[in-house]
Amino acid sequence: MTRVLIHPGACGMPATVEVVKKEGKCFVVKITSQCEMVEKLGKDITELTMMDAFKRFFDNPVYRTGATCLKHVACPVPSGILKALEVEAGLNLPRDVSITFLKNEPDSEQ
Image 1 (cartoon, rainbow, N blue to C red):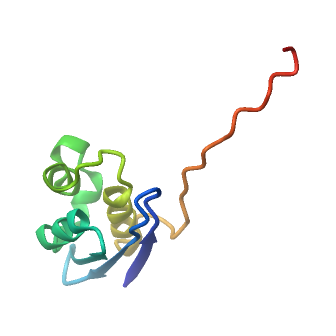
Image 2 (cartoon, helix red, strand yellow):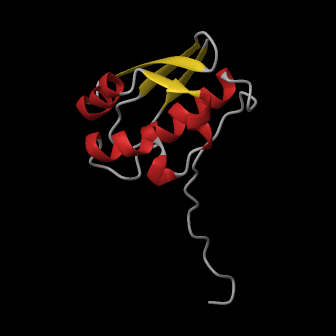
C-alpha cells in the first residue's frame, strides 16, 4: 500500500490518497478530503492500471476525470494520485515533491 498526503495550498483542504496493488497490473485507489470536488474525483476514480501512469494528459483517466470534477486547474491532487500509483507499481521511488514560492529579492543595482 502507498499513501500520500497532499497539501493543496490556499484552500486548506488536504487530501489523502491510498493506492493498493491488486492482481496483475490493477490498483485500487481511495481518496479522502474535505473538498467536495476531490471527494467526487475519488468516487469516480476507484481503480487504475499500471499503464495509466504512462498515459499523456489528454488520455490519462486521472486528468480527464479531474477536468470534470475540479474547478481549479492547478490542484495538485491529480499529480499526487499518479505519483502514488507510480510508487505502488514499483515505477518510482517514494520521494516528496513540492512547489515553493520564491519571494522577489530586491535587485542590488536599483
